[in-house]
Length: 359
Image 1 (cartoon, helix red, strand yellow):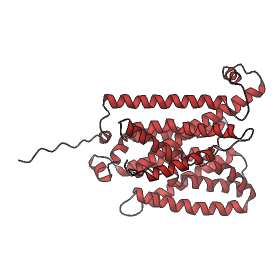
Image 2: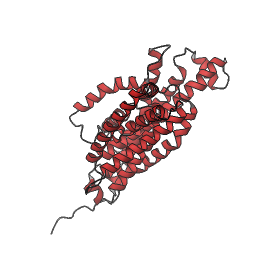
Image 3: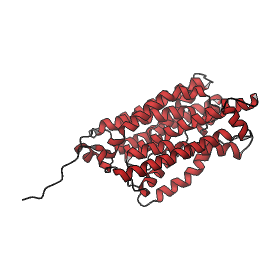
Image 4: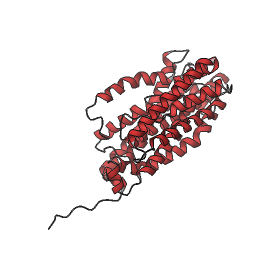
């Protein structure tokens, strides 16, 4: 007689192991802690800035009793939209980074791997240098369209051949498209002073000089991308075991990757179009969350990794933005510069980790 073999589960979410009451409790505690940390950074972002306003006056303004028109304008027209945009863009970049790493099974994968940032940059220099657009309202839509087109091109190129779309082919296609679009962007920017000036400001990555209307324009795309990402979380647990195992569990890997790429494109395309290509947020935060889940005994469960990345990425972005306001008063340092300053050393540490490839 042959020994009985355990029956294969058809539940993709079970690929990461059942949560269990204790694991679920630890996960909820982490989410609560991340939420509290985000709320603290929101308060700091509203209270402190390049303009020195006493915290009591800020609170009065938030409660509807501004002490002066100057304070009301600084808080309501600058800090509130800026903070809201930091939350939305940070959550989008963190969520897209976690999703991209799950799709490629590579903890060093970045949302920029799909060429989204390169496509947005190319579209901006075309909008300014060729069509003469000077307002943010005009080139935001160009940037979003360029991001969509670039990611679609990467996905089509990565899907060519018998094996279809694979993580390696997607990565190679992304590198090729990014390099090609980067060359075209430089060529156009160098022949148009207006395009070069606008591109330099956008490429630094900043939350400054944005209005609440900019956030409202991209909010539907961010919402759609986030809903797709969270819906894919159980399937991503199965995909982490490899395509063969995922297929044996009844998962359609091609459909999962298609929806995942669509989600990353919506999230990153919309965020990058407004705040610029802020690097390292989508790379460092999901990896840090993965380490945090490991120490908490939860493991790399996407049902916890995705929401925690969406909560902690805005913390990093808002912290960098507030630091940029305070360090160079009355001028500012762009948030993208400070994020890169912090993210670079962290990236080196990540590369040197012995168990880096384990997801």
